[in-house]
Image (cartoon, rainbow, N blue to C red):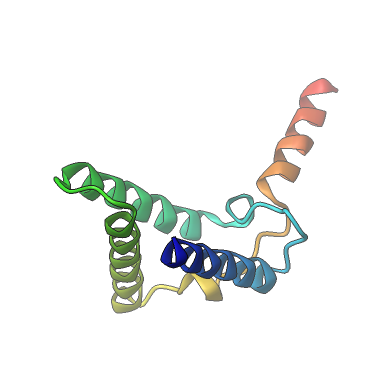
Amino acid sequence: MRKEYTEGNKLRKVINDIAKRKGLRYREDILDNMDSIELGANIFRVTQTEDLLKKQIEKSEKIATDTHYKVGKKVRQTIKELGGTMPEDLETPKKSLKELDKYNDELIEK
């Protein structure tokens, strides 16, 4: 249980660091504040991790965590090798997805 607590703390720290770097307010969703490049990399990472986890015979939280880490590391390595912009170096969009949805709803109502 202690290791799970530590892993949870590490994840919260990473999430808080990303939110801080993006200049997000408390409880603002990181995914709502990504541009298409960063979102695409995350979707690719998630789908590949999900596929690998489905193929695992032995299932555990540790295996899932390790798989997420390994796939994420490989995605970052590929971005770097291709000469792409690393996610942390991308600009945060001026408006979040929620703000754009609200604006779109207002336009439709008019």
